[in-house]
Structure formats: structure tokens, C-alpha cells
Image: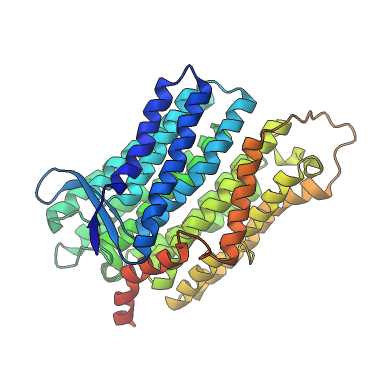
Length: 502
């Protein structure tokens, strides 16, 4: 049942309004931070107020304006969109408090621009999550690119300038390819509206035309999802402040890329058409190469943030590979991993920020014994690292289990071996950090000067760590019910087709 409701529009408007209020409060830091905090709490309340209805089969829709009788700027909250919207809105709350502590501790410049751009990114992410059609999706996809650019540029030095230009070059070019493909899809289908199971079919155009449109569209998602060889911008963007890295990896940008891939696979082309075209197999093998190659590259990185960046590149391709398998369980695992990776990776990056603020250390080789001075931070880092590797009772295990079952459902046990190998490699590049922190003594002549960190930074880390464990034990314990939403999305996308195909 579809219900016309203004709440999808409000969910986008709240962070956009917050960005304006933050900007005009630049002379009053406390008021500026208040606007950001109030907006994050209002947003999560608005999204969660719709979650129960979506779980019970209600689709919330709102059209801001219509361009033609078939095209409009329309927001729609379906199960897949609710997963992403709820995830981003929930995580905005801890990362907002963390940002306040980080900016104060580091005495960062440009704080007003930072909080305003951050709010714009969240608003754009809400628009992407709730876009009802390709045009709406494209508009907010580009808004996200432009609003995240000043965050990458935040330090305003030469390295940040080069990284931000690289980011724009990758994302703007791929975005224009997406627009061209969107126009092509409308010309052959007469619609842009997302539909579970896809709305394109083989009788609409020659196979090569559909394959070309798929490649153009999937490139836009693959750039932001950092699928190799389109990943170069992401490690470079690690010059940004750590809260920005957490935003890029867990809440917006790379997650929107993975979400875009799932939207294209499940709501534009659909499993039936993709199986006829045979092109999803190419995407699957690109994801496999990315998973393995990025894990080996991560092993060689001494800079902690760069190691985490290459970890993200591999983990996001779990989602891409799950979608490319086209089975219900694989789609379910992909949506669950969207949630799992976000919760675990935001924890890891916030821990990295605490390490940098307290010790001014960036390289892993210099972190001997820091766990003795920072037990809470490194304890949270250890739990999130175990989750990334797929350890039971942490949220990453549930998503990876469903992905593995999806590979078996597709008759592709080789991909199960890929995920298992990636889990072992994740242990190999993350757990040594924990071992050095807790099981190696501090240097006899330790030149490090430990500073203090704010509870604004420490409490969000504990919150997301607890969230990772709670969701790993019982993913249905509190709204939104991510497990049920993923089940609904996967069955809607591939359930009927897979039952027929079998």
C-alpha cells in the first residue's frame, strides 16, 4: 500500500535547513553545534517514525514537483530505501557528537563550513535513499558529490587540493555517464521509476544497447563504491579529517555507491534481464578481484587510515558481489552488509581519530603499547576488527553468512572461498594493530606525549561498538528491523524470478 506522506520530504529538508542555520551561526560555535545536534535527532526520529509502517508493507511517497506527466522529483520509502535511510540517520547522531569533540580537541579551522557541508551530505544521502526514480537519484547523487568536496578539501593544503580534485574528476565524470544512461533508459522504456525486480526487458532494445546502458550506470556506482580500478580517489581522500573519513566510509559517498549498484541491479535491470544479458558475471568477477587485491594491499599499509581505506574497498565489493549473484539470499546479505560494514567501519575510523588526537601517531609501526593508555579505544577497535573479519556475535557475521548462503544458492561455492579468504586477510591486517597495542610494551624511551580526548569522542565509539555487538546477537532487537527489511527487499527483487528460475 502506497501512502502520500510529507515525511520523506521532511527527512531531506531537516539536514538542508540545518546546513543553513549552521552557516548563519558561524560567530556562535555552541549555537552552530546545537543546530547540528538537534537536526540529527529530528532526522532519526522522522525516519524511525516510518520504519514500522514500511516493515508492515506501507510505502511512503511524496512528490515535490512534477516535470512532466511521467517524470517528477519524487521521494519514496520502500524497504531497501528504509535500510539506507535509517542507517545513515542513526549513525549521524554519534558521528555528529564525535565531530564536535574532534574539532574542539584539534582546534580545527573552518568548523562552520565543515558542519554545514556535513549536514548537506546527510541531506543528499537521504535523497538518494528515498529517490523514487532515476532522475531524483541523479540529482541527489550529484549534490552529494559537490557537498562532500569541501570536506575532502578541509585542510586547504596542497595534498588536500590534489585529493579533492581527484575526487571530483572521478565522481563528476562518472555522474555524467549515469545521466546519459538515464536518458537512454527513459527513451527505450518511457519511465524512470524504480520497480522491485526491474522495469527493463529484452524486448525494449537490442541486447548490446542494454549492456551499454548497464555499463554506463554501473560505473557511476562503482566509482563511489571504489571497485577496482576505479578506486584511486578513496585512499587519496584520507588526507581529510578523521570524522570526514568516517562519513565517507560509513554514512555517505562509498555507501551511496554500493547502494546505487544494488538499485541498478535490483530496481532498474532486475535479475531476470541480467541473467539473460550475462553481464552481471563480469561485475561479480570485478568485485572478486577487488576483494582479494585490496586485502593484500591493506597488509602493506603502515598508515592506519590508509589501511582502513583499503579494507573499505574490499568490504564494499562484498556488497557488489552479493548483488551480482542475483539470488534472494545474496541480495539479503548485500543489504545486511551495507548496515554491518557501516557500523563496524565508523567505529574503526573514530578509534583512529582518537589515536591521532591523543598520540599524534599515524603509522601502525609506532603504536606499540598504546592500548595500556587507551584501553577503551583499542578495545572497541578490537571488537570492530573481529566484526570486519566475520567473527560470530558481531554484526559482520550475519551479513557474511547470508552472502555465503547466497553464493551456494547461486551454485557458486568458489565465492564462499573468496569471502573466507578475505576474512582471514582481514584478521591479518587488523589484528596486528590490536596485538601491538595490548601485547607489546611501550618503548623504553617513549617520545610520545599523550593528550586528552573529549567524552564527545569516546562515548560515540562505545555506542557504535555496542550497536555492532547487539545487532550481531539479535538484529531484530529494536527498530528499524534491518533483518526483516533486507528480507522484504531481497524477496521483492529476486524472490519471484528465482522461484521460476529454479
